[in-house]
Image (cartoon, rainbow over the protein chains, first blue to last red):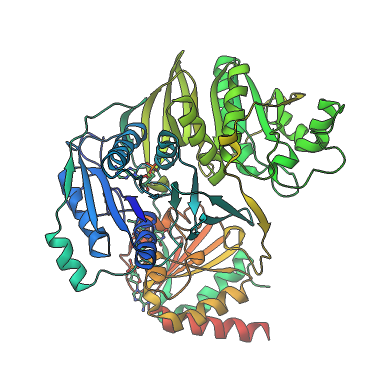
Length: 256
Length: 354
Ligand SMILES: Cc1cc2nc3c(=O)[nH]c(=O)nc-3n(C[C@H](O)[C@H](O)[C@H](O)COP(=O)(O)OP(=O)(O)OC[C@H]3O[C@@H](n4cnc5c(N)ncnc54)[C@H](O)[C@@H]3O)c2cc1C
Ligand SMILES: Nc1ncnc2c1ncn2[C@@H]1O[C@H](COP(=O)(O)O)[C@@H](O)[C@H]1O
């Protein structure tokens, strides 16, 4: 089974977000980078399937040259190959991103005579949260798809994919090839092993130079929402504060 | 011209709160343009809630309008939608589908939006809402914008939008150029507001033409036996983070949650370490909660965690670090070791109730 997993490099913002002076991006000077937890789980799901049934996991990202870091992270936990769709740092919208990913999948099929059996995505990107790249790729390739998957079984008949919605378990049964987006919780991703890290360091990464395309949505600027910044009232220190806590709970009416 | 709004119902057929927020958002657009809001609901059968019995819309010779009221949103749903300013309630009848079929729904919405000359199609930013809209966007080769909080029409095909990024930790202002605007609504940002004057919406059904590929993917549904207080709806959430120090420390978190009739929550650090299951994770990639009281124990307050709990009415933090970011969001704090404070608090509360 050949699996393509799509991951996106995003800044690892912590306590608060600072913006660049022009207000059009996140100031990443002091930040590390990562991928969405959903995507880490997509990589883990792909690696587990291939460990069991054989085949290959190819990690793909569309991003700046530095996004190879995230591809190497995927290799360190078991991906076999990696493709960078190199950008000049400009943000790509979801329609153009989906088209570029689809072109890679089509080229793979043209070269090997077989499509990727499974294309895995995160449910939504951590930064833009567009909720659509996976579905768009599915339509472009003519594959069935399901999103937000929290439990996955794959056998000769195809994919059995489950998720919860409003207290209902929804089971989707899809033939392969298929497109799925998954959510964190579907598995607990492993940490990279030392040999994995070594392999990642040396791995060769294929590069493609897609041409930037605009989407229907044009960015004006970003802002941090005006949330009331409070300064917590200190009830006390250590166990001495317990009576004050009990009083507070009483006042809030949460004690029966 | 019209603004089409997809509305969802719960298992009992009641229109869900997030959809009323989506309708409120749709009014932001229709008020500017004088367009009518067309609410689109699913027939009970397409919702997967049975409906194959008497009153089935697929049965011959049935009055569609009658069908729409009994099989669709019901008399009450009809009145509620009217109160929120909906002018037309349209029941989407999807032949040959039982259960949720996202692409069939999108095809239905596309045909209906065409017939209603929609300038926008709106849904709540829920799992179903986002999925259906993404299919609609792909089918109709249009952009789709998720998690919008504001919209203003500035031209025949141009909207000025605000939408959430990073699960609500950032707002993006942008301009959308599209013949039909496909938007999902950030439901924690847009409060449900009744229309100044209630309308009496017309009721009708719409049966789209579906192809095999539209119905190929559909949900086989089963109801869960949910036990205990659900995290998403709990009035009190007691959450533990890395500061708890290990899986054992959660005994005290559970006891406190039990005493307060609440649910246990955790940070991602805790699920990544395997101390607790992901179903308890609060945050951007976990569950969103909006309890009356949120107690954050040993949690630093990363924006991705706060994305899931910032609408809590009251927040209490217990943390050794008075400089932790959580202090800028919490209303009250106790500075100190959570593993000493929680057991003492549990003791005090247990003695009190005896
Ligand atoms: C895309 C993305 C999505 C994410 N989604 C989520 C999400 O859904 N939910 C989520 O929670 N996180 C999420 N995260 C992770 C988030 O950024 C933080 O890493 C995480 O929330 C930290 O968890 P924590 O507060 O428990 O741990 P830490 O940040 O390590 O904080 C531990 C805190 O405990 C305090 N402490 C230590 N010892 C004690 C003690 N004995 N008594 C009292 N206090 C003590 C410390 O002072 C510190 O403030 C996401 C990250 C990314 C990049
Ligand atoms: N630039 C990108 N490179 C690779 N994969 C991406 C990129 N953007 C989005 N994706 C994938 O598509 C999923 C959904 O993204 P979105 O529709 O933007 O929320 C993500 O979780 C990724 O798996």
